[in-house]
Amino acid sequence: MYKFILIFLFLFTSNIYVYSQRTKKIPPDQPKLVVLIVVEQMRYDFLAKYWKKFSENGFKRLLTEGTTCTNARYNYLFNHSSCGHTTIASGASPSAHGIVADNWLNRVTNKMVNCVYDTEYQTIGGTGIVGKASPVRMLTSTFADEINIANAGKSKIIGISLRPEPAILSTGHCADACYWFNDSTGNWITSSYYQNQLPEWVNQFNAKKFPDLYQERSWTPLLPYTEYTESLEDNLNYEIGIDNNKVFPYDLKILFEKYKDYRFLRKTPYGINLTKDFALSAIVNEELGKDDITDFLCISFASTGYVSDLFGTTSLEIEDTYLRLDKELAHLLEFIDNTPGKENTLLLLTSDRGSANPNAYMKALRMPTGEFNSTSSIALLNTYLKAIYGTGNWISAYKDQQIYLNQNLIEDSKLKPEEVENTAARFMVQFSGVSHALTASALQSTTFNDATLRKIQLSYHPKFSGDVLFMLAPGWVAIEPDITQTEIVSHNSGYEYDTHVPLLWYGWKIPKKEINRSIDMTDIAPTISNLLKVPFPNAATGSLIYELTE
Image 1 (cartoon, rainbow, N blue to C red):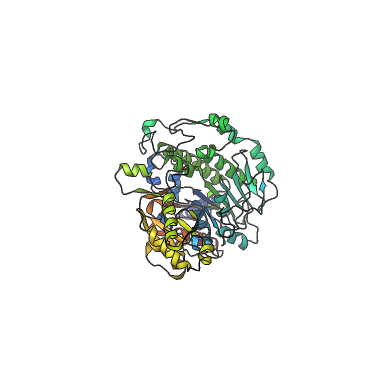
Image 2: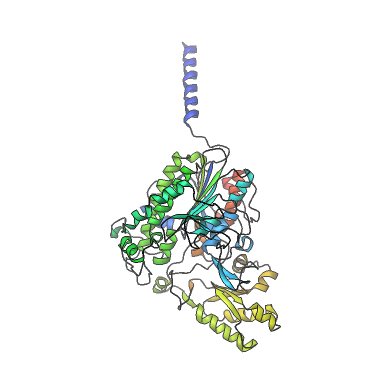
């Protein structure tokens, strides 16, 4: 009887073990799919701010089932969206990857250029210049490039965003496809850099006219007004609003009838729905994560950035947007559970940059703040340079705290460039709100160890940056009063509100953990490369997040 009991227990427990091994989803050696989610202009503190309102299956699921980096920050000065996406993907700062801003001066043509605009390529899926784009101005490889190279070109690499810059710069040079939204037609389009025609599944998605369905709706609060306790009232005088409307509801049907296009769709949470739906369609139709060769998908949610620009970080509209994003995120995670499976998917969520609180609100709280008038300041600088060096236009261009001097005039006047640069820099620091100014000559000849000056240096590239770069004091914003403002605040600082962003890891072999030490955003790409056992991007300077690799 004793032997019989032992044999029974052995067989019973063996069957339980075999059953558990069959049903337990064991992660493979390599993830089948890497998904990068970039929520534009998401500050780290939003996670705590809206925590009570989030569902259990969106942001909370990422935080409770994965690894959270609580102190992830960008290490450079000019926190433009394009810089952030490229830094995430390349593991390098703008000083190396070359995307120093969203736009900068082309010294050859003496015209401003967009970081992805490329006349060598054509719009696919539409007409006009909206599809003339490529990653040619990005000087380095990305982790997606290295994944594809390591897999002999067999990995599928796809980027999706309402805007071309995130889709292109987050994927790299080897991407199979990048798609973005055309406001005029309501279709998803691409560039001939990637394809000569849209895949049939994209045409079918466009044919379903999802934007028309959203354009029939009004954006109204998800919850009763009284429950938006984390926000200010719904009528702030400093908001820009949607078509001058600053109060719910926002009737997209009326706006569509007025403008005959989809320009405002991206500026509401419905842009999040549309982006997510298109991303899910890409996963299914491109069969991402179906085989053992790692694929990569970037999903950039741009609508959060648009809403932040129009209404600010303290608005009821931004809170409503994040609550709606949480619901779409929950749907995305549920979908990934089934296709291709959580255990097969390495997912990370982060942001391209943070966002400052509205300047007017900070003034009302008596916080140190101010507005730097760039138009009058640069005009005064040019007058000052005329008084010293003679008549002429000594400034070729100004853009986002970068001054481009007239190098031809300096050369013709037989002046030393560093002398004129120093004169301009000394003049600029006299303005209220300007805390530092560095010259191109100094940035090329000196290695700065001071934390503040180092951030300026990491934003500088000798081929694309200005001749004088300056930094505003904390809380200060640059304004151009002669130009219609399209956003409440600028994003050109190296301060906490612009640099501190969420960094959440989830899925394949990711432990439940919280990492509280400082993480540089350049650490993301090397860490992904290390997890996948592929070479680092070729100019990566970041370190491994070793807590994920142990």
